[in-house]
Length: 361
Image 1 (cartoon, helix red, strand yellow):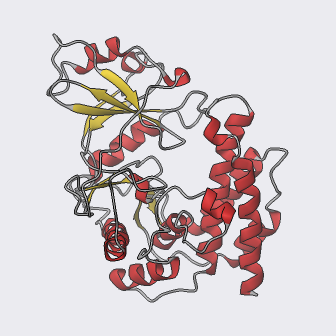
Image 2 (tube, helix red, strand yellow; image 1 turned 60 degrees about the vertical axis):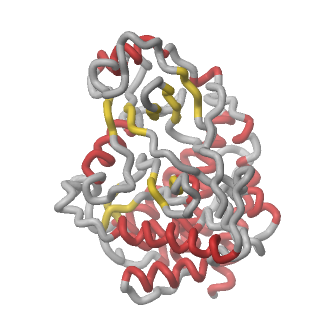
């Protein structure tokens, strides 16, 4: 594996811009490597992700990462970034791939600096893979397979974290996770649905009728993808960081895997599915979805279940996320052109879910 460039940020979008001077004054007495005599940091924005905004704060001595909610975030989610910061702080001693949080805006005075909550964490140096490999990076089939296995093994490790020892028993609501997820994501879809969106009623009814009991209760990431993993900057393919803990909770590990596999698009998937691809799981040598499930179950020491429910739920959940994002674009809360055609993907996912259900009988 050749050494690739780092995942580089871009200019800050106008709708996400802020004045870095007050933030710099607040950070200086709190964070090592931030000198009050220095000018404010040079701010850049990472383009990946469609929820909380992620910025690079470049200082002479170190790089930091800022996370804050997007413009137009809805009531009830305003403190998600602070929850995310607390999860990372508690989980890091048990799961060393979590970035270290160095400061969080817990009070109204600090939040006034950026017109809302935020936190700042270390930057883990390395490469983040997007839809295609970055220029200069090559993966031959054995390397692609090892990368896929590495990613799945890190998920197994996360699910094995001792919840009580990590101080995370209050992270979720306990038993009944699968039932709550089916009901909750169905409700979210109906709330977010725009005129172009399909009803998804047949899929939601099937999920409710077919939901299995919880397979377990553990820390789950809830958005586990290759583009939330940081790879060793030396080019070994080793995972050195796991990012974006916004939706982490206590839940069913197989539901976490099902959600992850909704993004695991293979070379043989159709044209529209390829358009949704945001990680290079199509490369020769990458594990197929079936092989991922087999690998996970083997490493976790569990019997492989019937995967139909988890596959359909993962795709439905992805459709809801896309519809929620498209709804923000539809309502004028964001002008990001990347979201303009999300409604097409939502319609495709409805068709795909119904096809899987029909084939399962």
